[in-house]
Image (cartoon, rainbow, N blue to C red; front, side, top):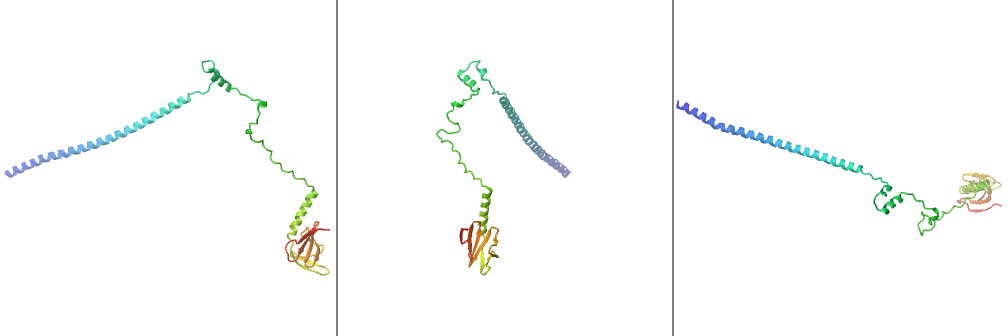
Length: 222
């Protein structure tokens, strides 16, 4: 019997001792939860204050900007100087304003100097005129054209060989020619003697030697 009562008393003591521990743990957990909720509420409140402050600042800046624009837009700069002459003011300034509205033309005879020429600078010099090109007649133009063709043709003549005899022949530019033949349309074979060929071009005679490049001599035709 005594053992049973002892066990019962021990159980009651343990239960009574454990009850404060559980109550303390619950209180601590509740305090932790309340603290977390308080911090979260505080952060939300701070964020809300920042957003409200920013929105208010933007609104105030917008109102200030619109107010300045409205003030500038309402300024009128157009005026009539004649209106100021009716009231008090500086007569000299008002007269100057009135005079500035009148277009003044300076007579040409009053101008002593060309406004586009600096004082002391020399007068503009007329550009040098190119000499007039003389007009050539058709005959003169034809003569010049023929002379140019003869000059070009004589630069192309090359005598490779000469053959004497009753009918002398000359090999020029790879072709055999004899006296009187036409060469390059504007040249004519005048003489074939020894190693030399005489060719006529217009009123000039040109001498060429076998194996020698270019014209060797030039003289007027008789």
